[in-house]
Image 1 (cartoon, rainbow, N blue to C red):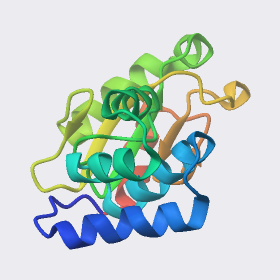
Image 2: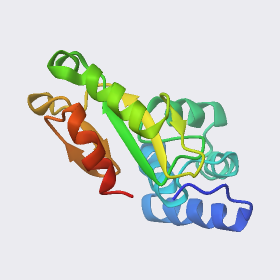
Image 3: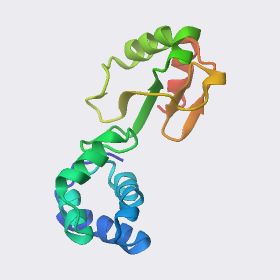
Image 4: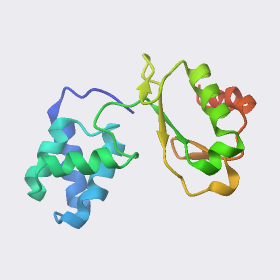
Length: 159
């Protein structure tokens, strides 16, 4: 759930729990970031500050890693995150039309979150399941061979 946390205690507890679970080496960085992102819905600045302090990793490096991976976000996301594969294999089998349908039905642009905090729409590079393109992922659910006409039905499952 993507909530702007005002209680720093919640943020610190999420970070400390992830660090305790994974460790304090640089090898533990991505699992820690992933856990905190999953728990809080994104990686607030206070979380990055605490991870930097505990792992002794510069904040600039944390931000670089957090902004590189599409599964991580440094800004609040919607309750449901839709990842759209923009790779060439998905594009040639109708991906553009699926993308336009998503944008139309959600009334969102790329990397935008709906005003009600329900949806975030992002493009991502290859998801590795090209044989069933076009592909979208909503939260943890994968949809392959998607057509523009299926978008309303798929979205209705999350309403």
